Image (cartoon, rainbow, N blue to C red; front, side, top):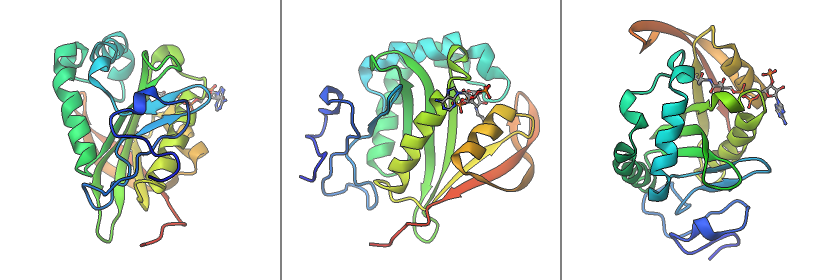
Length: 216
Ligand SMILES: CC(C)(COP(=O)(O)OP(=O)(O)OC[C@H]1O[C@@H](n2cnc3c(N)ncnc32)[C@H](O)[C@@H]1OP(=O)(O)O)[C@@H](O)C(=O)NCCC(=O)NCCS
C-alpha cells in the first residue's frame, strides 16, 4: 500500500487527513477506493448509509435556499430515497463515472453542503462537471471555497482529470465569485442551457484545467 493508504471501507475511522486507498483500479482512472478529504473547517466525502438522515435534513431545511439556482426534488427530504441513492453514488464512484460528495462539519455527521464531480469522460477529454451548494446558515464563511479546493486537488491528483467545468446563471453572483476565487476561467455563454424552475436559463460556462496533467 502507498502512504496514506487504508483498507477499503475503513476510511471513516481515520484521522483528519486526505485519505486515499490505492489499489488495482476497478475503473481505469479511479485510483482511490474512496474519497474522504479533511480540511481545517470542513470534511468532504462520499456518503455512507449512516448519512441518509442528515442528507435528507439538509435538503429539507434548505429547500427554499436551493430553489432559486439549484432546486432539488421534494423527495430529497426523504431519508428512504437517500438509502437507495447512496448505494448508487458509491457504485458510480467505483465505476469511475462520478465523485458525488457531501460537506460535513468536523463532527463528520452534520451535512452542510454538496459538491459533485459528475459525468466523467476519459479518452482525449479527461473532464467532469462540477456542481455545489452550501447550507443557507453557512453561506459567506468560505466553507465552500475550502471544500472545493480539496475536491479539485483530489480530482486533478487522484482522479487524474484534466478539466473541470462549472456553469452558472449570469445572475448567480455568489457562484461566479466562488469560481473566480478558485481560478476558473470564463469560456462563454450558453443560451437556454438548463431548464430551471420551468425556464430555459442561459449559463456562463467556466472551466479549470490541470496544467500538470500527465498521461502516465
Ligand atoms: C454558490 C454558493 C455555494 C456560494 O457559497 P459561499 O459561501 O458564498 O462561497 P464561499 O465558500 O466562497 O464563501 C465566500 C464568502 O465567505 C467569506 N469568507 C469568510 N471566511 C473566508 C475564508 N476563510 N476563505 C474564503 N472566504 C471566506 C468571503 O469573504 C465571502 O464572503 P461574501 O459572502 O461577503 O462575499 C452558495 O451561495 C449556494 O449554495 N447557493 C445556492 C446553490 C447554488 O447556487 N449553487 C451553484 C449553482 S451554479
